[in-house]
Image (cartoon, rainbow, N blue to C red):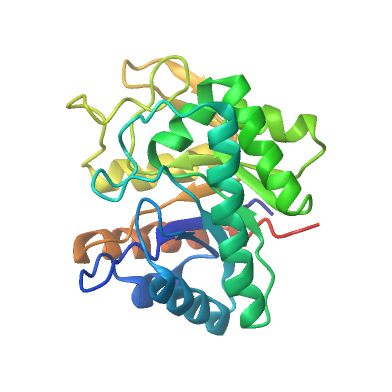
Length: 254
């Protein structure tokens, strides 16, 4: 039977500001990536999100980002590899502590936003981030863009990896995400997006934004659930995978 992880980026509220529908999304996915307080989230939100995920039996991952609350971690801060190492280790360590406080183990790490994009194409920076994750716990699963440099860096260290595919993002002919600054970055046709998810899990191929067939290994599928419309989309993706006989489960730890 084919299987795939279904993940969502959560814990992105901050102080008085609420973002996302975490309570509704958590039961629909097999793993969650929890913001660690730098691009989004705060200690209270981190704890609450971990508690909810642990109660639901959902696998928990750290979602470290650039120290950029105002820009939501989507601006390139041009950190050095040494800075990237320190910021990632700091955030992963905090998430490990919250997980252990409720009696669960942190399972994976998935960088956020521009940190994620940088890791996909910049090997020295990816090496530093992978090393930070390894130093926190070599048993953590490293989640990164399929065919990206972070996946290669983690494998060099002998770590378990999960290559990620995005349901609502277009891909270039080279297999990377179309930048959000471009109008065609996002997929708005839900039916097409759902059909594409099933295809990539079964066949390992999709069409790029230019219509070229590209190969993408999808170990984990990212779905966003930060509004009511997106919540329905998460439900549709989950149902489509189940109808297709594809088992939804987290990659887990070794």
